[in-house]
Image (tube, rainbow, N blue to C red; front, side):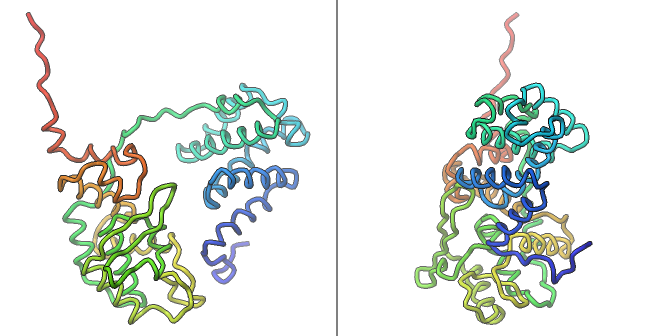
Length: 328
């Protein structure tokens, strides 16, 4: 039976763990204990609740397939699992699922087999039997907004509504600093230093915390929201839900708002990450080094921003050399 809006779980940092527990509870009875142990193992590896939930769903299917052919406990079934059995399951699964689902399953299978190896159920090298998916590093281009699209997004009039000040402030933050939606959602009142005119975004996905100067436009949009629209609440987070309970605004709500804003501006509906791509591309074209861009984006590795070099056509032309002529 479809849940009503009142029955749906309101997003909060803790709700991610609730979804994780629900995923385990919805699995077959015999799978719940190994999935629970798998979730604890993943958390000890530093994996977040949302990512754990995704892997649990795929791992549950993998466990079902392994146990179905043997009718024994999870541990006993995996003790007799062979590399051919691992490959056979993945190939069969891939025939009915797209590339994204195959990637999820590949990640879950490898993680679960490493977990099983830590329990002594399988050999340490069985995870290597999961087939790889052919992909090419830096094969694509970042899908950032062009300068014209960015001007349209930021300059178009805002429709009257319940959360105009909040949504405007969020869009300005995303466009000005190139931060992730999760970092905007996690922004706290203490992260804004009005005296020094600085703003701090928490580290995310193993990266570094980001420190920026508070621009005039961003400062004005934040002040407008905090003074005139933000609900009265003891919550430390800057951006809150408009309707009670006034909890932290979730990342998914930010994505939905950004896409809706783009549609109203006559732009193709893209998520907040397109503003991050536009920010990085803009810095590169302004002459910033890849190292500086990595620092401003909060990345620890330069490899994470190497793809942006592909959009700087002027520098690529400068670095090109004439094709050597073959001597007669």
